[in-house]
Each structure stands twice: as structure tokens, then as C-alpha cells.
Length: 329
Length: 94
Image 1 (cartoon, one colour):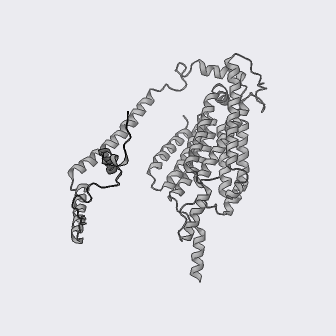
Image 2 (cartoon, rainbow over the protein chains, first blue to last red; image 1 turned 135 degrees about the horizontal axis):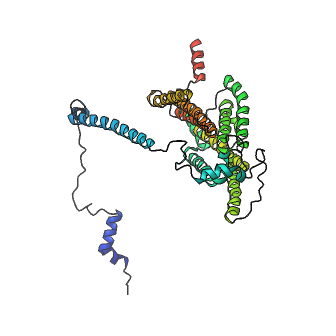
Image 3 (tube, each protein chain N blue to C red; image 1 turned 90 degrees about the vertical axis):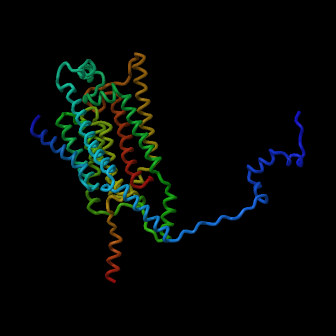
């Protein structure tokens, strides 16, 4: 049975003293031991300068290449080993190239039944005239979905790293102006009105964006596809932005646009491909018509997937540039 | 391999070496841009136009623009401030 001690009794115990010492409310030496305040050591300027000089001399001796033979040796060995390492690495890589199978040989490992199947049955099964797009977005659509997600993740990371709050930047600019400091960052600088750039951009931007849309929509008929077309559209948007400034682009492209477009495109891709995976895995017949090869509305899901990938890539490129330039939409 | 491809490959090698040996960062980005353009031409010679379009758009276009933006951020490119010059001129006239 525990007994409750009174306060006076408790203050006599060792544990109370220990806690008092630990919490620092009472110093046990105060009043018991004689103490004097310590004097701060005073160094004259001569002594301090002497010491500085000694330190400098020592440093010079240690890091002076001519005086220190060990350092000289180390530098030489370092330089020689760096060059040797580079040469050996290049040699090993070139040596490995010699082991690659020569192109165009009939019995090399790459020429197995998989590409034969792609080349022979690709047009029938996917309906795409461009076999590359047929492979990327039909046989290996899961890989492309992963790629789009990688792009989305990259943009998200850039947003986390480079995003700045507009209010904070404006506050800092105000403080800088009041203190008479120059603005250090160019985040909020609008591009200057350059008549040559604007005249060129007003001609080029529609052509570039139209070409990008053409490359996206004709991905299953001609070379190109979602990724390259999206990159072209993104480049056109960047050119428009650097010619006409943020005010005009913010009317059509904001953070919300990015969010909805990327999310919508990725979800559409996921759902469309889930359908074909589901039907394929369960040996069901897909109800999406393949159409006549060569027509623009053909090859089943590939057109939709191309548009989705193109939208994601275009948004990614544009967002990268905006984040690097301004840090805010 | 025809002569055009050999010329392109030699240019590619020159560009690849020049990127690391140019002293100005801006110049090396420009050389890298030309590297991408030559690479896209080589892709066309190797009969893969899909890659050529992507290389031209991403390698020569977007990547170098991002490089320029970054170089401006770290003050590797000198920014000419026109307004400042004008005010200095006005002050000089007065």
C-alpha cells in the first residue's frame, strides 16, 4: 500500500532534490561554494595578427603544390587515373558494341516471332497503318500508360519544387522596393514587347500548333503520335507565351486547366485501356470497330489514346516552362 | 552508308566534343541544340521518322528552352535591361 507523503516530508527526500537540480530551479552550488565571474581573455591585436599569419603560412604550405611533394604526387596520380578511367570506360563500351549483333542478319536474336507477328498481323489486329503507333498504343499500351504517368509525376515534382505563392512574391517585391533594393529574381518579369518576335510568333504559332494537332490526330496513319505531337503543341504554346506575355496565356491556361486536362486525359486513357484489357483477358470480343485502315476514324482506341497522350505531354511541356520562368500560373 | 550519313556522323562527333569544350554555357546549349537537330536527321536516314519528329521537338525545342530559362535564373546570361539604359541616357542628357 502506498502512503501519500505531505509536502514538507517530500521536500526532504532525495528524489525531490534531484528533480529540483534537473529542472534547474535551484543550483546546488549557489551559496555553498565561493565563485568568481570568469574574466574574458584579452588578446592584443599583434597576437591575433601573428596567429592569423601563422595560420595562413601553414595553409600555404599544406596546399602549396610546389612545397608539398605529397600533394604534387596526389595531383599527378589523380589526373592520370582520371584520364585512364575515361579511356578504359570508353574502351569497354566500344568493346561491348562489337558484340552487338549486326543489323539485317536473319538469324539474330531480335528476329524472333514477336516482331514477325507485329509486322504480319499488326494492320489486321490494330487497324493502324503506322505499325509503330499500333505497337506503342495497342500491343504495349500499358507501357505508354506508365510513360504518361511518369510525365505527370515529373510535373507534380516540379510543381512542388518550383511553385511559389503569388502573395509571398508580391510581398517580397514590395519590401525590396521600400528598402531600395533591386529585384533579384525575374519571376514576375513580363516578357518585353519585342515587335520582331511578336510578328514572327503571330505567323508561326498557329502553324506550329496546327502541325502538332495534325501529328497527334494522324498518329495511326503517318509518322508521329501523341508524344511528338504533344511536344510540338507545347513548344508552340511556349513561343506564344514568350512573345505575348503571361496575361494573354493566363486567359486560356491556368492551374485549373492543367489539373482538369491532365487528370481527364489520364483517366480516359486508363478506362479505355482497362476495357480492352478486360475483354482481352477474358477472351471476350471487343465491340470497338477497327474501321477501314487509312481512314482518320479507324483503328479503334488508338486515336483516343493518342489524343490523351498528346494532351498530357503538351500540358507537361508548357507547365515546365511556366514553372521555370515564373513559378506560378 | 552513303556520304551524307558519314558527313552527319562527323558533325555529330564534332558537336558532342564541342559541347564540353565551349567555355560559355550559352554556346554549349546552342551546340547541344544543333546536336539534336543532326541526330534527328540521322534518325530520318535510319528510317525512323517517328523518333526524328520527337527528337526535333523535344531535344532541339523544349529542352534547350528550359536550359535557357535555367541559365537566366542562375545569371549565366546577362539580361539587358532596356529601361535602365534609357533612364541613364536621359539623366546624361539633363
